[in-house]
Image 1 (cartoon, rainbow, N blue to C red):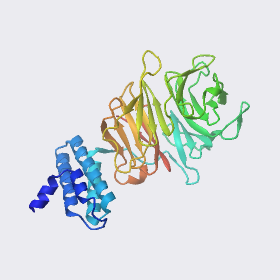
Image 2 (image 1 turned 90 degrees about the horizontal axis):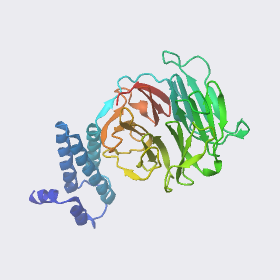
Image 3 (image 1 turned 90 degrees about the vertical axis):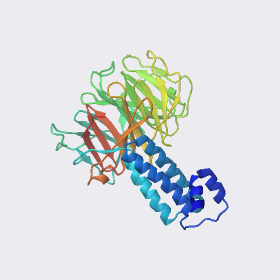
Image 4 (image 1 turned 180 degrees about the vertical axis):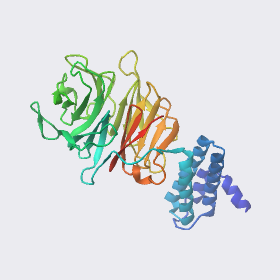
Length: 387
């Protein structure tokens, strides 16, 4: 017993140095399990006192220790049980808030035609297909029900618009205000052949001519802020900015130096530019200074947000009114709410009891007029949003 107590007090690094030469096996190791159990019990006690950040720290240490033991000694029944307990407490530590108003979806999608991204403008819902070949418009009635008319395909790969053949559709973004190029709010879409298209109910679909297509190599994300279009180009490692209030639109390189944009899966432009990458990292590119170019690049620490099997696929942010960032965690089927300035975790949004499978295949979120739209591989939901 004395030996066991002493070993529990030994740091994990010392423990592994002691056990490094032992053969791998599948039997429970009482010393290892005691170390993990101690941290799990501390986390449980902290949660009882609503000390969430301290509990998260204890669970993170317990998780890392369990993973290291599994890598060096292999799985065991006792270790598996503790990992399940860590996972259970992890949900409590990260303050899961159920969306109690979540009911039937606005739209459902067949397995043969799943979605990838969406955009919303009042009663109009725009959905980019997972094969990036088509964008379809759905219109809801005043009761937020799909109208009887057939969905409208507004853009399709290989069709010809104003003499331009549409390539693979990479991304889309909605511009809610008028510009010099349209007196209507419009949806803008970009393809992998460096073409930009514009859609609204009056003008329908048209090709938009920008200053120089040769500025881009591989556009991966687009977004709007203050009548300016931002195009993230992984080929040149640059974010190009276009002022659509000008009759002749010329590109401006927004970054003072190229950066690596490969793997960018999400971008939000506000008083800052945030980029989400496919390795779960978020990068903040700096704040505006009287409309001037970015002059700093900072890693954005997502404090306490990464959990078991986390896989971030989209982000949304608002620093103008409500001051929040949303990270869509497809791996865990939840939406994380963070502080956009520090990355501090606030809480996460999850389906209510009985609808746990609603967020399976979570893909995208969109906030429009205090409503949160949630896109999954099978459905599109809406819910009142108060961050």
